[in-house]
Image 1 (cartoon, helix red, strand yellow):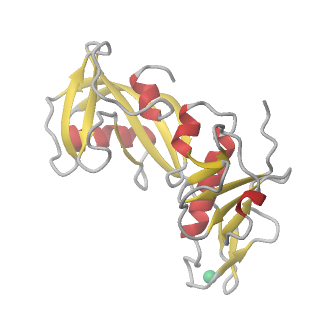
Image 2 (tube, protein in one colour):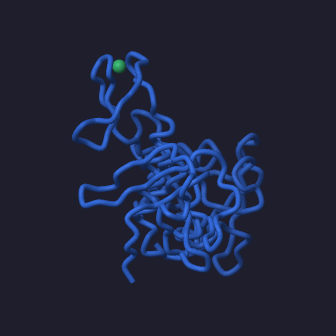
Length: 248
Ligand SMILES: [Zn+2]
């Protein structure tokens, strides 16, 4: 069923939906609440707003849905929600001119912000990152991170650095984090991930040389796992899940 609501209401990264559904709530559900920001999603219509203050309890008959849940359940809304939340996240962070420090205002014709002082235009950001399934004789390499969700084993991942190719970033991350050299590195696919506005580019790679040597401040543990005997991994909908389960 096509979702008809023309507005998506977010607060603290969650989407307001009708209770028991993933159907977005209309603005009448939050009458009286202060709106901190809003953005038009496309020329054809559709708007997203971010409420000021904390999410708190949802109004009667509504619920705050986690965006990860929408993505995991393959909701028809997921694409629009990723775009909406990515744009709102960018707008919350991009308020001043990077060139002169002036206040940014709305661009009159484009989905962008423009500096009132010097005319610099800020376009919505996409941060490219890589994530890789490393294979060795049928087993796959998974790691627990010191910072990110330390109870789960996931694929190695990291940001692409300036001047670097995506494949180069894959090789560097794997070398830095676990001390391995890779053979063939093959692009698998990509996924938008609105935390805050990542583009996750997924790769499959073959181990070539080296034994596991963990970067202590980043990696708590890393092991080779049989695909039939996996540890706790990130939930469905995540890029890591699709890579680990070979369901891209
Ligand atoms: Zn400026």
